[in-house]
Amino acid sequence: YEDKNHKYWLEDDKGTFIIDLISATQLMRKHGLSVNYDDVPPEILENAALFGNIQHAWLERYYKGLAVYDELSSIAKEGVDILKAHGVDPIFNELKVNDEMVAGTIDMVGFVHDRYILIDYKFTYNYNASSIQWQLNIYKKLLKAKHNIEVSELKCLWYNKRMERFELR
Image (cartoon, rainbow, N blue to C red; front, side, top):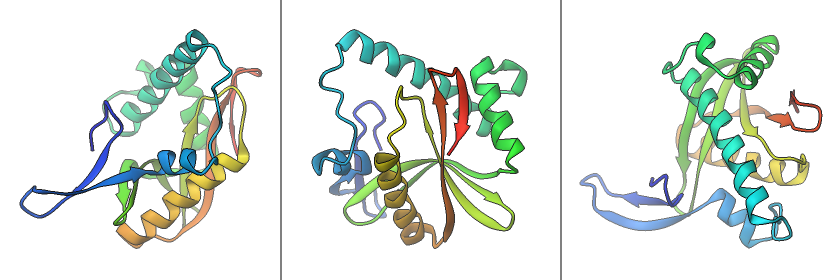
């Protein structure tokens, strides 16, 4: 996986390139299942992406054990608190999954009441339930194929910018 270009590929056991994979988000975009931001001015998109990337990075660092709670932004702390309040016990964070054609990175796989739960973090202005549902179902399929983990629930930890608070949907 190459983070800069959001590119996935398969290699054999010796590290030799086999094939490029399409990312789950690229697949969704190709089939019109993702949100279209073409009408949003570039500077607004850049600022929104920067905000989301920073908060996402704080959550990622915390759940990977690279940051302690007191170091987090107030927004990231709220996200951690909501997941704790819902009894989410993190198992995997930023988990790469794939099959022979599609790949993606799952923000979190957790455990709640003896069940696996898949969680994606979103910092978009609007909540697009259909797009999120498609993305999480692709991840669910890939997780089952790659790790034989059966997910019971799909959730989104969404930061509602209008209300300035997280929601677990």
